Image (cartoon, rainbow, N blue to C red):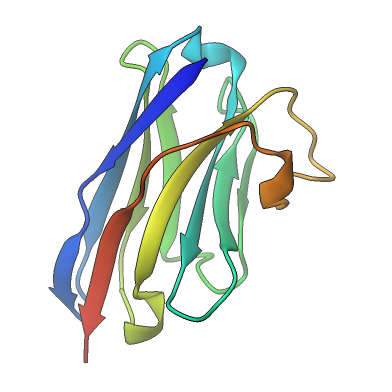
Length: 126
């Protein structure tokens, strides 16, 4: 069992930055691939970014590539999402998620993740 706790969300103006954190409690964090997803009101949960267990591979949704950066610190059991050049359309509840095994073909699929946090709200004003 892995418990995930997100933090770092908030209200920011368009063009601003936020850094989300996700702390993992429980089983060996370094065994898990980690992902960030987001869900806006009335919309489906959407893949944002993912990182393999040793940070060898990272993946991004096209809408955030070049603006967001995912990283992890296995010694601190934490995964991060640095978000720059934020836009109003980035407004959503952001979730981190964990999965085993790592599979690049399904890294974008929320159904393949085993554990989820409660989410942290990001609101970008225009």
